[in-house]
Image 1 (spheres, rainbow, N blue to C red):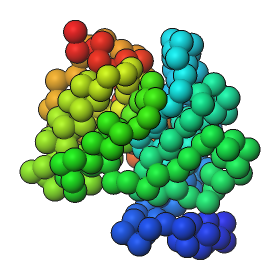
Image 2: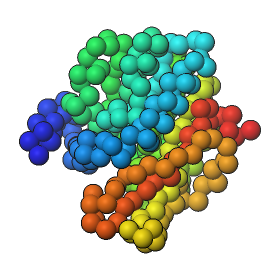
Image 3: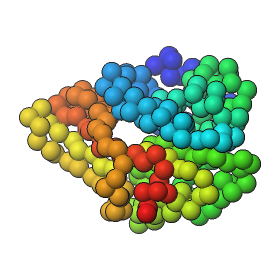
Length: 239
């Protein structure tokens, strides 16, 4: 709790006022990631491994933009910073917990933005103005944006984000939750939800499970498992 309060205080001062209401959920996510480091390890290794491998596909390495950079759990920041001339991390909140990692790299920059088109239909238009844009990474942010939107807007948020990514003039790596299931200790599914609200995702790409909430995290006798998919280049998945 003391660590969370310290991170909150340090992060509050530098967070633009419009984004300060998002600090507490971001700190809750960061704290859960620390508690569940072992359970989350396979998911994070898969995400980082995919990105590390995809770096090799880029012969021109000027600017990479990460949408939904968050606590940097799933990003090989060091590889990105050593390989690209500029790394732009974009999210509503950048906690002070990431400062030690980014301090070593003067080519890493933070930007505070709401990426959801539920708040602004032009939320991703800034990408057109990023100089030397050679790679965009959408990192486990899509389902969160859909969940944060009004129910009537959720599918529209998914549609808009994916259509914008597919139209970009550079490769785009997409990592996203597809759905989740809540199971009891006998493996019986008690609850489930489609986190992309019916969007017909391609059958291609990589798939894996993410143990988001093991037993006792959210409830004593249930666990929540997310199913994740990833495409090294989302644009190619549309062909």
